[in-house]
Image 1 (cartoon, rainbow, N blue to C red):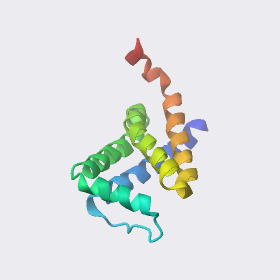
Image 2 (cartoon, rainbow, N blue to C red; image 1 turned 135 degrees about the vertical axis):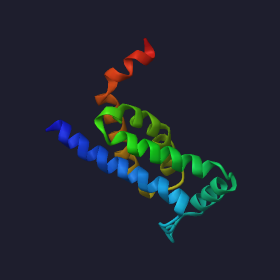
Image 3 (cartoon, rainbow, N blue to C red; image 1 turned 30 degrees about the horizontal axis):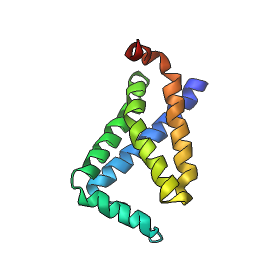
Image 4 (cartoon, rainbow, N blue to C red; image 1 turned 90 degrees about the horizontal axis):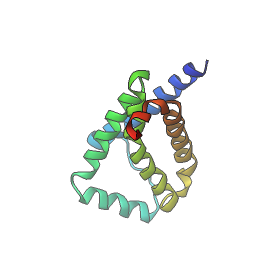
Length: 125
């Protein structure tokens, strides 16, 4: 039962990141109207660095696809972890209203890492 729940959660988690990554290339989701000025400035700075948003989008897409199947889930969780830390810090500093969702996604990512911890042991031996 736990494996089925983890699969469904990873499927939704992966699809969210695939969607977010694709949006960085095709810009099909409009920006919310009520963004604070600090978030607008942050997004403008990200856009000014021309290679940053495509890189983040590419990593989100790859990580999203890798976290869905059980065989590559450990790799996908590690690839998404730095993006997830950035999302969490962005919501802590600039946009506290989205903090609950960011914490939930971060906890899911950590749960996937903990569930696959035996696959990481060879990296630290």
